[in-house]
Image (tube, rainbow, N blue to C red; front, top):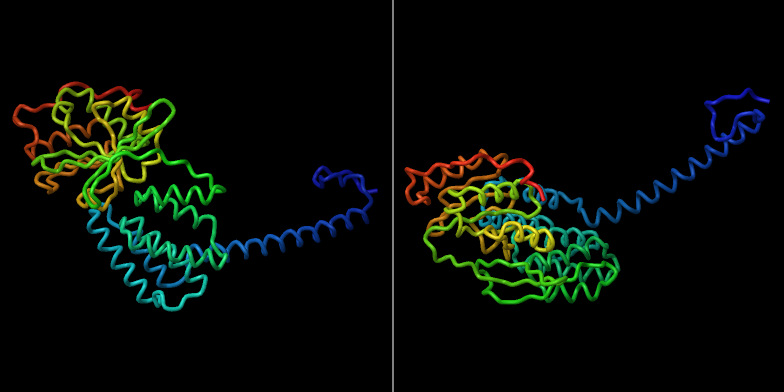
Length: 347
């Protein structure tokens, strides 16, 4: 009999030495078997993921160019960068002439990413072509199916999104609300999220760009800093007066956050938040950060105030309004009042 040992565990104490050795041998075999299975699974997973992620030098170059943007770039400049990166990828990868399945996976991802950054239909059409090829090859990944639905929503192609969701019930997509209104494609427009009872609906509205002076505030209903900025502005007699006609716009990707947007508008009726129809029609704006205050005159951005780290940012906003002469009598403009207490910044 072996001596008791609390370090052995697994019920091996008080067991014959030969039994212990046999148990250790079986344990090693079990470990080897588990390790082999893990390696096989990892290999299969890596093979599948390599289709979605892409491994070619052309893809790596494309990916790096898309994800090293300066946050100060406008949507117009971003489009130019993406367009050039896509053209370079097609040139160095051989384009659409001859592709195996792995290359189709890669081209699909490139097309989806290009459509995401630009909102251009031609990139979405390229993604659809790859999607059909991968479906015929029975090589389509679940994540790739999800990406196409997301691309439809981002492109505001709600008819295609409805059809795709109906044809892919296993993906359990959130049903899109009914859509009201219509706007000319390419024109600045927003989507208002309305709740009636338990039902949501979308109403599209053209943005009136005829005003010489306009303040556009890019904010997000899920952004704590945006919430604090809205709370402060509403409580400030000076800022609330100057910004009473400001246009509060949420980034396009916020569209499916129904509950949060409705909650924001219930709390901030004078800072009614609408979702941008797309980025392409707001070429002078930057949707990568929130909140951002754009002071625009005759379609040109005169001043840009980024963020709301604390209520002290109100001073910087006031100074920008003075420089742009958006304040009427800028000489008498003072903030007045104290910063809001911390508890007002949270829902």
